[in-house]
Length: 304
Image 1 (cartoon, rainbow, N blue to C red):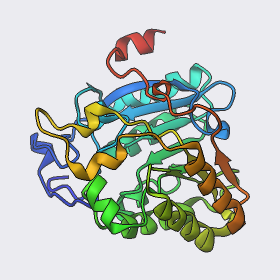
Image 2: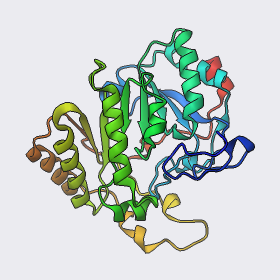
Image 3: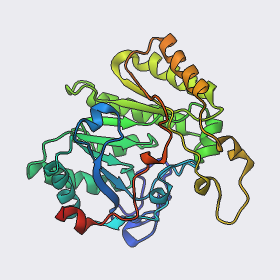
C-alpha cells in the first residue's frame, strides 16, 4: 500500500518506502510478544490461555495506555509473513484456546496473508481480533470470514474525552461504525460469545461510562457481551511526556477507579437490563495485567 489509509487517521504516508505512519510503524510487521495469556475474559483465556500476538505500534495512542511501550514502537521484533504464520501454528501446538491479534490494524493486509497460509497448514482454533475500535470499515472487511470473535473496546461516548485522551474527537462515531461491521461479520457464525465489547471505566468519567453502556444496550441488546473493566492503572510514565510538566487535562487520571465508582457503573448496567456482562472483582487494577514486552524473542519462542 503506497499511501496508507488503513486506519481513520488516513495519514497517507508511503510505508512501503520506510515511512512511518501515525501508528509509528512502516509496512514491516513487528511483534512485541506472542504467548499464552490468562488475563482475558474467561471464555477467551479458557483453561490453557489465549494465544496472544501483540503487534507494535497503534493508530490511537491513548495517554493512559498500559501497553505504551509497544504502542509507541519502543519494543517489537520484525517478522515476515511466514514467521507470523509459524507463530500462529506454534501457539496452537502449545495449547492456545485461540489466536488473539492485539492492536493489529497497521498490519492487517499481511496478517490476512499469514492467517490464510496458517489455515492452509492446519490452523483450526478460533481467531480473535482485539482492537481499540478506531478502525476503518474497509480495513475490517479484509478480515471478513477470517475472524471468529471480535474483542473491541468502546472507550468513550464523549468527543471531548476522545480528543483529550486519544486525540480523536471522532472516536465514538468511528467506533460505532466499526463495531457494527464486526457485529455483522460474526453475528451468525455459531460462536458464543462472538463479540465482547470492552469498556474500561476511567476515574471521574462515570457519566460517559453510563452513556457507553446505554448506547450498547439500546443498539445490540443481549446480542453481544459487554466487559466492564475496573483495571485502570495510573502509570506515571504514560502521563508524563519526556522532560515536560504533566498536562493538567490528564490530572484526573492520576488515581484508580474507586470501588464505589465501579459499583455504580455495574449497578447502572443491571438497571438497564444488561445480563450478558463480565465484571471484575477485587484488586484487579494491578500491573500483573501488563505482560513483559522487553524480554520476548522470536527464536526462543519458536524453540520452546
